[in-house]
Length: 247
Image (cartoon, rainbow, N blue to C red; front, side, top):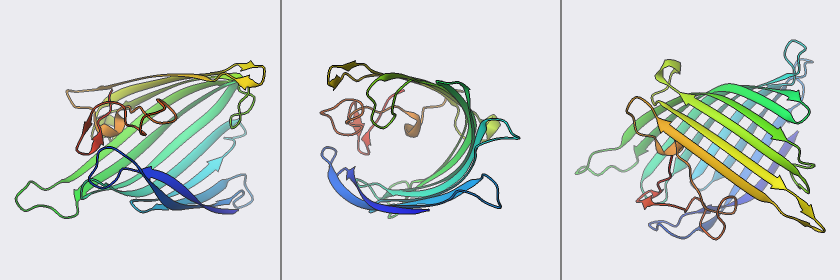
C-alpha cells in the first residue's frame, strides 16, 4: 500500500532562543504485506521538511519458528539543519528488535540499535576552531509494557505502565558509555462524560567511565505532552543551540 500526506511542525525562528514557527512538510510510506509468499512485511517511509529530511526502510515478521515472537529490522538515514547555527547533522543507523506477549496485557521487548551522528559546520570561520564531530551510539534495550487501555488512540478507561532500560558501551560498538532508564505511567479513569487522564514520567541517565552525557541522551520537558503552556522541549536551561536537557 502507498500513503502520503502533508504535515505541519514547530521550528525555532532563525537567530532566536524563544518562539516557534510553523513549518510545512511532506511524508509518504510504501508497504508490502507479503514477500516471497511469506508473512513478511517490508516497507519504506520518507519525511521531508525545510530543515529535516529522512528515509527509513524496515522489515517485520510476526512469528519466529512458529513462536509468537515478532521481529523487526530497520535502517534509517536523516539530515537535520539547525536554525540558529550553520551546523548540519547527518544520522544513519540500523536496529533489531524482538517483541513478545507473555500475558494478555503484558508485553516485553529487547533489541540492539546502532546510530552514527556526523555534525559539521557548513561554513566554518577561519578564525575559529572548526566543528566536525562523529559520534557512534550503540545500545542494548529491554522494555516492559503493561497496557489495559480500551483504545490506544482514543482511550476512555485503562492503565498504561512502561519501563525501558538502555545500556551503551564501547564493548558493543559505541563511542559513548551510559545507562538510562525511563518509567512512565498513564491512568484514564472515566467520570460521567469526562475522562480524567493523568500521566507521570521518571527518567534517569548516568554517563559511565568518566564521560559526559551527550545531549541526544538527555531528557527534555515542555510542550503539550509534558508541561503545557511551555514551548516544546522548552523547560529548563538553554544555551545558544537551545534547550540543554537533563539526566
